[in-house]
Structure formats: structure tokens, C-alpha cells
Image (tube, rainbow, N blue to C red; front, side, top):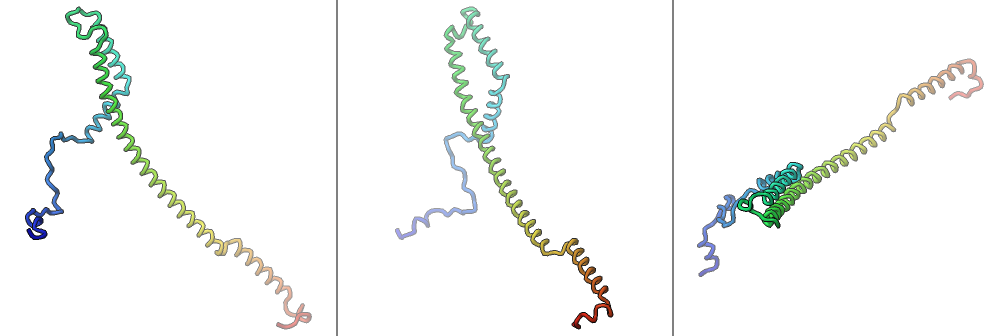
Amino acid sequence: MPAGASAVNRPRTRLDVPRAPRRTLLPEYDPESIGRLSERIARFLGTWRFILWMTLIIIVWVLWNVFAPALVRFDEYPFIFLTLALSLQASYAAPLILLAQNRQDDRDRVTREQERKQNERSIADTEYLTREIAGLRMGLGEVATRDWIRSELQDLAREMEERRGDGPGEGDAGRPED
């Protein structure tokens, strides 16, 4: 068989077309819907309503299995079935609560990342505005202000008054010609 012959026998697949999904024996599920369900259950497990219902069920269970006629009792005194039911409930509740906490941690992480980026943008904007204000202050240092112009005009007016006071004929004899 010449080199590259195996590639000729194999059908070419296009890279721009998605592959057909593979068949698996595992059941398919939507992780987002399971996550939402676990959050709802965890939210319910953390309420007073759940504690009240659970307490009432346990009280009825114990009272029924202590005071009911022997023929209708389904869990005698050590209440093994009740212990099993509570253990089963706890074994499912703990992972659901952890799943809900993990989802909340993921949301918090995304929120923190967005806040960090927003803070970086705010800092960059603040630094830019600080540089702009510093540049304006430096530029204003070179601009003639109203007070400076006023003082210069007053100096010129004083100087002109002094020259008028030294008008022709009064102080010409003592002054050399320019």
C-alpha cells in the first residue's frame, strides 16, 4: 500500500460542518435546569417552613408508631425506618446545597471580575482627568490673567503720568537727550 493510501480510503469531513452527536449510554441532562432546581431546593431547605414541616412529620411519625394499634404501625420503637428516611433526606440535601453554593460562587466570581474591570476603568479615567487638569494648570500659568494685565496697565499708567509730569520745559535741561 503506498504512503497516504489510508487517507484516500477515509471520507473527508468538512471543518465548517459540526459533527453529528455521538450516541452514549449515559442519560442527557441540562446542567442549568438541574442547577436551578438545586437552588430552589436549597432555598427551601433553609427556611422556617421546612423546619416546621419536618418537625410536624417527625412528631406525627413518632406518635403514630407509638400510639396506633399494632397492626397499622409501620416503624416500631427504635424508629429504624425514620432514621433511614432522615439519612436519605440528608444525603440528598447536602450535595444539592453544595451545588447551589457552587453556582452562587460562580456568579460572585463573575461579578467580582466585572467590578474589578470597572474599577480599573475608573482608575484609568481618573488618572487621565488628573493629567488633563495638571496640563490645564500648567497652561494657565503661561496665560495672562486679569490681575496681571490690570497690574501691568496700572504700571504703564503710572509711568505715563510720571512722563507727563516731566513735560517739555520743566525737566529737559537736567536730562540728557536720548
